[in-house]
Image (cartoon, rainbow, N blue to C red; front, side, top):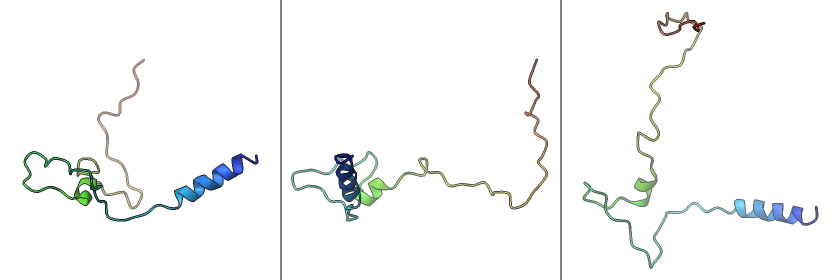
Length: 80
């Protein structure tokens, strides 16, 4: 128990020290190649933004009150 507690405290201390700053390349790194079909190198924020296919917008309006459902022709009883 005595060796377990300092490990937990250390892990919590490391987890709480995150920094939110602009992403930059290290001095010895080169940027990734320009994607095919683009003329401008995208920035770090552009590369981190998920495309629309990865996070589609919800286009279904949720039901606000109890409503009768329409008959579903594919809701068939099990065969047997």
